[in-house]
Image (cartoon, rainbow, N blue to C red):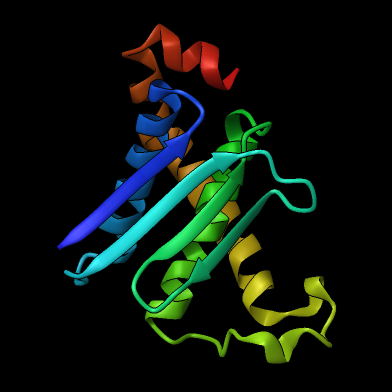
Length: 141
């Protein structure tokens, strides 16, 4: 079974976060039937987002101060890391600590793809979603 849950912030933002996550899963991970993703929208001091897998659940943190397109792109960036792990696209582990962050192949991939996915999401989904809700327009503006 697939579980997606967002925590922190407010109900509208949590639902928005879950909606983006389900869109990503439907688009890039449709064959996966057992997946747990927990997303915390919280204040982060040293990053915009993080993604950690504990063997059962992917734990994503997104900085609560992010808004609009930056929030969406950050969430998608972390979700790309989920995909990378599930599909074993890169060896993501602590052995990469000696490589500068921007030079890590899995980070370069995540930045490139999250930008493209963000534009696709905004152009296809977000505009329709935002039209349905004044709360969403105010939340991400």
